[in-house]
Amino acid sequence: MRNRNVSTRKPYLCNKIVPDMAGIYLHIPFCKRRCIYCDFFSSTQSEKKTAYISALCREIQQRKNYLNDEEIQTVYFGGGTPSQLNAEDFEKIFQTLYANFCIKDGAEITIEANPDDLNPAYISMLRSFPFNRLSMGIQTFNEKRLQFLQRRHTAQQAVDAFKNCRRAGFDNISIDLIYGLPEETAKDWEYDLRQALALRPEHISAYHLIYEENTSLWKLKEKHAVEETDEELSLTFFSMLIRTLKSQGYRHYEISNFCLPGYHSRHNSGYWDESLYLGCGASAHSYNGTSRQWNIASLEKYIAGMEQETPEYEIEELNLYTRYNDFVITTLRTSRGMPLDRLREEFGEPLRSYCLRMAKPYVNEHKLEIKDGFLRLTGSGIFVSDGIMSDMLWVED
Image (cartoon, rainbow, N blue to C red):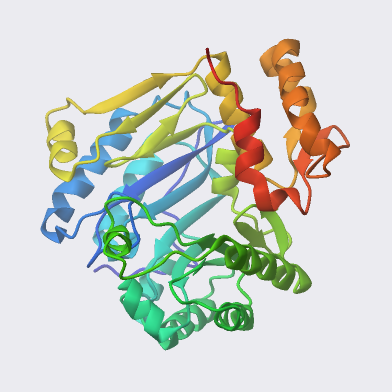
């Protein structure tokens, strides 16, 4: 591997002047082993990694016009486990990205990583590339539950990895947590939150465990080997999450996401703001303002399609009503809420009237509020947000 110096090396340059901004998502599907709850597209076929990276770079090049020369504000390496890649893989991807897109100076560039991959040498290697944000999949600090989830790391490895990343200069670190695990108690969840806050990450994403069909976790439930957390305890966990993180200065800016001031995820916020994005890699999704497109969820077919320049993908053209439904779901997830001026401008008075009519019962119940030109969930409404958003969607006859 060539010697790299993060403080002096500037190999990736953009010389275009372009007016707008968008995001790029790169799906890296490789995992050493699958976690029992995961239903994202992933593969343990690490022997296909070289061919996949070549195919990914071909797609980046082939789709360089998808975003119409808009400036790239965020790049996100998701998975799978992107921390399974090595320096040569990152070198090839970044060279291809910067050769084909204008990436904004200071763009947020995130990599998802597993704690056990983040040894000091690997962290040093990451620092030699433009990564300026880490998303670390910790999930829990309970050893027994880490083993149950089939996570590869221990709680101590997670703590050590976080501290090593901090020492190496990463000053924007997000951690993922999962609650509602089988047999988890409020005391267990309080411990996880306390351990997370001791690290003082800039960002915390916390998700309730979901039993996705066809996962190993789903099969355990079908055999009655595990039981889902009941609704009352789930609400207790969620209440503890919000109360605890807010008390420590974290802003609850989206249903499952919390950040210290100024450290929201710019990439994910782009999804909720309906910014344009290009998704490259097997199963990756893209959005250009008028349609959504997603690649085939097959390693072999994705690689073959890119090699033969016959990629397999599907496209959904968005009409007024599908765009309205997306608008409801994405905007109401955020603390800012739905901008009512945009609602009228983009969808017209009939859909604006429909939206407010469907929202009125929840406004009367103080689960929604209209303030400063925005329709947003209240503190009590956030606990029943799925039902509220479902009721506000347009259902075609």
